[in-house]
Structures are given as structure tokens and as C-alpha cells.
Length: 307
Image (tube, rainbow, N blue to C red; front, side, top):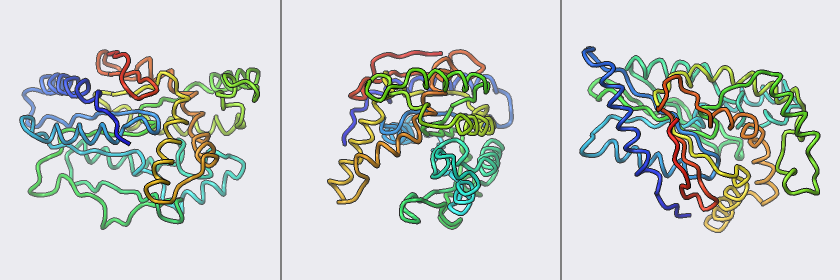
């Protein structure tokens, strides 16, 4: 599916401006520390397309920046650890498969970010979603990407992209209030209220995800800039994901059915409902360092906000 690129012409000047501010703030140091960028967007919105263009542009002339792109997907638990997590929480549908906060290896993430921040030799993990009949698993170490090795330029720009990148946990009482509101509002016969998925899950499972999300602050707090590809209507994620899977079935003859896609997205949607509002308000301590692009159903940019 071709996605018109109307985003990189907005994002690249923003990144370069914030990178210049970062460099000026550390002027005089022997080595300017790496610049960390978080990039959030719902499934199917075009994150991969955008980060590919950003990486190619920033690496190329005239910028020639050493860039490393990471995906939150590459930080998933190993298959064995994911199975253990699911078995130890058999009633929690949010952790029966990879995806929700709590299914990532935050010990690995902490080590990875510390090494990149200190410009140490680093192995970038890779995750193969096709292993174990689609359940996925981390690739063996020999297939990880090596950066900051002897003879290599030190990585100066790190972009972490992912559907939950930048999400911040809420006070537990706010999660409970949102869940109670969802239960009062939910009516399966009503299209508008059926968009509210929190009522499909147990409160304790939402609280589990919320508490696990606090562990993600160790990487979120490293961001020097944040880019948020924000759907005007987050419910569009269902249509976008259905489109992606339909094209996959047409191209390969394999893929999830529409019902399977809906069930799959259902496992992610509660996080969108709970945490998107806080992200929209801005998560960085320095003002003017977060770029929010609101996207229409055709994925084109409607509005631009700097927060």
C-alpha cells in the first residue's frame, strides 16, 4: 500500500532544529551526547515508512549523521518468557500474546539505552514475528546489529519507533474511573459506544498494564524530542490494520481473517484509550520538543502542533 509522504517534510526540519539546540546546549564538551527521538503512531499509520525516510535523509548529504533506528517490537520478551508471563496470568487477555506494555524486556531496553547513551559498543536486538507459528521470538545474538564498534562512527541520533512509545502510566484511580465510565457507556448495538473497549477487560488487567508501563519511563525519560502521529479518530486503526492484512493476503495468500484482525487490535486498543490523551498533552519536560501531527482517515496530515 503506497502511503504519500507528507510527514517527513514536516518532521525533518523539526528534528534538525531540535538537534541543533541539543548540540548548542552541549557545546564545549569533548563529545556531544547522542540525541534520542521517540516516534509514536497507531498500527498501520505509516511509522515504518516515515522512519525509513528519516533515516535515509539524515544519513545522507548534506547531514551525514550516524543514525540508529530502533523498534519497540525488537524489545519483546523472548518466546519462552512470553509463555511464562501468559501462564502466570492466565485470565489476563492483554498478556496472552506479545503487544501490550508488560510484554517487553525492559532489562534489555535499559541496558541498550545506557550503552547507546554512553557511546559504548552495542548490539541492537532483532525480533522475528514469524517464529513459533507467528507467536514470534527474539533472534539469536549473531543476527543482532552491531553499532559503535571499533572503526565505526559513534551513533549520534537514535530513533525509537513503536505504537506505545511515549505512553506514560496513569494514577490507578484514573484507570479505574475510565474503566467504570466505559462500563456505563458500553452498548454493543451502538456504533459510537462500541468503540470503547475498556469494558471488555477486567479492571485488574488494565491496572497490571498500567503498572508495567511505569517501567518504560527508563527509556521515555531519555527522549530529547518526540514525534506523535496521532489519528484524529483512533478507531481508524481497525480499518488501517484490516487494509494491511487484506493486502498481505492478496500478495502472499496468507494472513489473518477480518475477525482475527479485530481480535488482534482489541488487545492494543485499551492502551490507546488509556494513554493517548496524556501523550497529546506532551510528555517531555522541555517545551517545544514534541511534534504532534493529526492524521485524517487517508493518513494525510491535517494539523501540526508543537508542544
